[in-house]
Image (tube, rainbow, N blue to C red):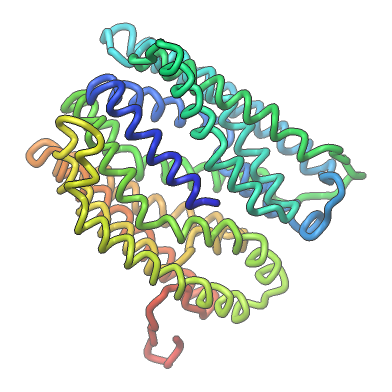
Amino acid sequence: MRLAGMVVSFALQIVLARLLGASEYGAFVYAMTLASMLALLLSGGLDLILLRVCSPFQVGSSSGFRLPRGFATSLAQVASWRGLVAIVVGTGIWWWAKVSSAIWKDAFQVLALASVLMVLSGFVSAMVQAKGKAVLAQVLGFLASPLVLLVFLGILRISGFSADTAVAVALLQVCSLLIVLVFAVRWLLPIHVESDAPVDGLKAEARNLFLFVLLGFLIAKIDTLLVGTLAGMADVGIYNVALRLAELVSLFLAASNMHLAPRIAALVKEERFRDAEALIHGSMKVVMACTAVIGILLAMFGPWVLSWYGKGFEQALVPMLILMAGHLANVALGPVGYFLAMANRSDLLVRGYAWGCVVAVVASLVLIPPYGLPGAAAANALAMISWNFFLWNKIRQCYSINVAVFPWRDAHGMA
């Protein structure tokens, strides 16, 4: 299902790039990036906590969703102060766009409202996954919204109308998210809030996971934001195409993580780390083989694929190849982030992403001005490799297991 979602997103990106052109498409991407940051400020990491805390209640059950009262209360408290932070940041971004007369200003104003819908969609997807419905969670998380948006664009085209501006596409994006959210809520009913069940350390874990996802956002998006600031919206559009195509290399890892997360959480809770290692290795061998095939195909047919996007997007070829190297390392080192999240080691996640964030910011500032889009891609790849290696090494040290595809033996012979 994740594969279907990627195919639909791939088709949607081509349609938007050809419809809007590099500059307007870049404006939409830039505004969407900032709106995603607001959504992150609201929810960052809470969906992972929701999945971990509630998985034991619902895996394998077809009944309604059960939620511990202590968790629900703590979740509301954390979300309230995060909402205030998001409002302040959103206001600051809007003021900056207004003063600078940015062409993405109007699209951002629309998508800022959509950030709340993004948060709710993330929660719903996590809750559905906690019930053991991994396929449905992937449909809601990766397939439904881009598919609905693609259908909207098709209907408008048939009707003789054209959504050929970033603002128009932003409005359609909001409608798509709302439709999917209304449809998805029915899968969670009825929701039972149980008697008080203490959830120790939830606020501290929420803080650590918030830092983790915020740093992860900066690692993934600082290059896009700097390209938009230092170059222009057309370069943002071209670079986003390179990013999305390179992400195909990690396609099967992401799909595997969705299925493995509840099972890893159960094994780690019982301290069956070797069993978790065996489970991961069994999955990662298949994932790596599929990844290699995708990488080879992209390298061979990259110029032809980029021609689908329209004039100017052929410049994305070199950045795409550089970014693919980072994604190959991401797959080779295994599901390090998911393992530590399910093991409730958000402190290690924060440290790993902090290191990756430092690499991303420094490398972007050094490489983008002289080298442009290839420099941005190199900074992204370096950051991805650095934080993945850091977390892989911490798992090896703390749990004496190796979650990477390749074998590794230390001085004591531990694989």
